[in-house]
Structures are given as C-alpha cells and as structure tokens.
Image 1 (tube, rainbow, N blue to C red):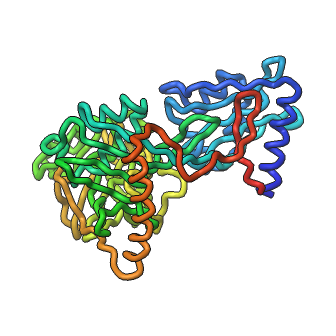
Image 2: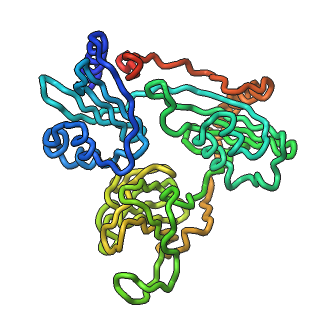
Image 3: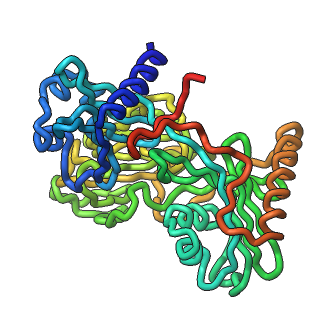
Length: 403
C-alpha cells in the first residue's frame, strides 16, 4: 500500500506538471499555527484537522518557524498539493482528490551527498568555516565535536589546517537538516587531531577511545536562564522557601527541547507538579528530567532510546508553572546536581573485533583525509553519486524509492 501511494504521488505530480501546474516555496511564519495556516489559505479545517486522530493533530503542532514548505497550484491558482516538513524524517502531505482535500503524513524523501573541504585557519574554526562554506550548521557541528577535547584559544595558530568530510541531505535540490560529520582533522602545533564517526554512531579518536561523552549544556537552544539550581529559593506559587533542584529555561511555548545526552527514556507522561515530564537514563547512573512540557515529540515513550541533541518534546507550562519554560534537572543515582556544571560520563574504549573493524574504517577515512590534505581542495564531493530524483517544474524533487 505504501509503495502504491508513493508511486501514485510521483505519477500524480508528473501528470500535473505536464498540464501546467506550478510549485512555489515559502517559509513558515513565526507564531503561525497550523489552524491559522489553513484559514489563511482558505483550506477546510474539518477534514484537515478536526477529523484527524489525536496523534495526527499533535503532529501538526510540530510546524516550526523558518521551515521551507511547497505549494503546488494549477493554472487557476487553486491549491492542488502541499508538502509541509515537520522534522528530518516526516512531512505533512495535503492533496486534493476528487474535489476534496485530504491529509496524510509521509516520509521525507531526500538525497545524500558526501562532501569535503579543506581550509587554513585565519581567525577561528567557527568563523573560517562560515566564511568558506556559508554554512553555520557545519561550523557548529565541527566546534561541538572538538569542544571538550581541544583548546582552540590556547593552541590554534593562524595557518593551521582544517579538513571535514561529512554527509549532507538534500531536499528539492537544497541542503536539508544538519550535516553528519564523518571524519575531521585539525592541525595544531604541528600535530594532527582526528575524530572519526564509527558504525555504532559514536565518535572516536585515533586509538579507538570515544571522545563524545559529555552532556549538553542547554537542552533548549538560545533560551534564557530564568532560575538557577539552588538549595534555597522562594517559590513564586507556593510562596515559601523551597529547594530548586534544576535550571529553568524561559522560552516560547512550543520551542523544541532536545535530549541533553544519549540514553533511554524511562518516563514520558504526567507527574504531579512536574506536569508533562520526560526522564532519560544515561551512563554512570545519570538521569535528566524535562518538566512542564507542552507535548512530547511523536514516538517518544518509555523504553525509547534517544541520541544527544534529538528533539524529545516542546516547551510548555503544564503542572505547577507560572509560564512557558523548561525545568531541567540532572540527577546522579537519584541525587540532584547542578546541570550547569560540566559533566563527563565514562567513555567507551573499543576492543577486540570492534576495534579491528574501527581501525579498518579509520584507514579508509585517513586515505580520504590524505587526498584532501595534499590537494587543499575546497568542497570536493567524494564517494557517493547523486541520488536519482524527479524534478517537477523546478519544484518538488522526490527520490525514486521504488527500485
């Protein structure tokens, strides 16, 4: 059935293109809800929202400001189809069938390219990567990968070499989602420092020691700290002194909340004054808690394994709360600790067959790094060909997944 729907979708787009339809791309406005969006486009709310099941209604709340979406119109400017991306994996497909609008959630279909670049440091890795590539995402992923293992301010010198090889998804011919760093090398004081993405999804150094064993500092990006960890705080609702065993991040309702570290969800539901709460168990007896959430991301439930930086829910004001914010706690074996302190969990050391497989992977990476180090190539595409796509009137590009 799924294959049939994908085939129907592709053939339908092809047919509409041949008869003069056109595709426009827009950015989702800040503050606009899904229902506001339907009203603005004169689309019927009953079949496209109120008749949906609860899970699909919650899904519509994941639309975020700045997301690019596409509208397919006919010659009379009537809307025939829409693609509304929700995250890296899922999108809403609104389409007209026999005069009626219908709603479905379908996978995002994208192509992936392996890309690489080499540069010499002029100011700092962050600014130099942006200057050379125009990608803030690449700069952020490079700096965060080395954040705790190297001291750029102390040891980096002008002229030092930096190389990145990474996978980048493309949707509709444009970069989509965060790149995945495969291997990176930075030269400091005539010494080369490498990080490698292993098959288990973790990063390791040249010796097979894991280097990414840290919890993130902020589970809500760019949010303001409204209340810090303290054993003594005057509670604004209870009007009495009470310990505040976490950090509050003030943010707009619906702001994404990410996992502060990789681990397994042990609770996702309501819990007293916490309101809607997620608990995640990490290594070394650590647990993080995310309270007062508006909602959970689809698929987040007890037993689910999540990676560091993965969106798990959205800021709200459920439970005992004076306004939209995230209450974030860090506990070790049940005892609360200050989340703002740098916490390192035990890192993994590869041994035996795992290490042998990693060293083989490392050799392949090193050969690619050696080529780019020798040639000083900027933005060379390596190893993966372009995915076959269908282009419709300069708009939709959906991967042929039927082969």
